[in-house]
Length: 141
Image (cartoon, rainbow, N blue to C red; front, side, top):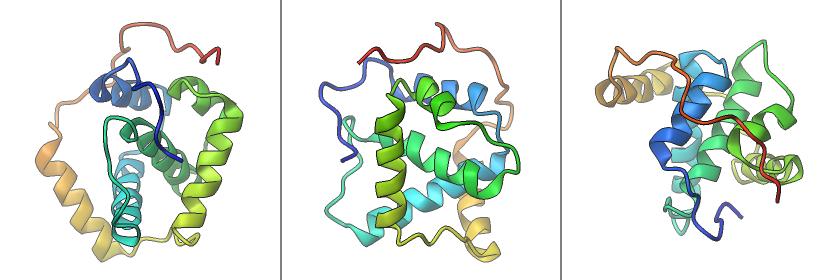
């Protein structure tokens, strides 16, 4: 359900940049999103993160993380626009993602620290919120 055809035209780095700018969430949400994707892969070893699935897995895991962790979050219509998805599609992805995780979204502090440290090793500390090129426009599909 996370695969799309054809492959997204935007690269994953630019897609993540859009999320970083427009999600307006704390760094903890990125850690939680990584935990959730890793849990999903461990629960479903047949699930592969590919160029056809990575965008939808990322937007969905970030959406779930924001709703679970942040006090302030936006409507799914807002997040769908950022991700270039129809809101109904994002709703279905969110529902399926949570079902696959068994609705287990809590992350223990020790587990959080492990994943936070992983992200700190691979993400530059000087990353700033800058406007990505192009407008944040919703998909017309």
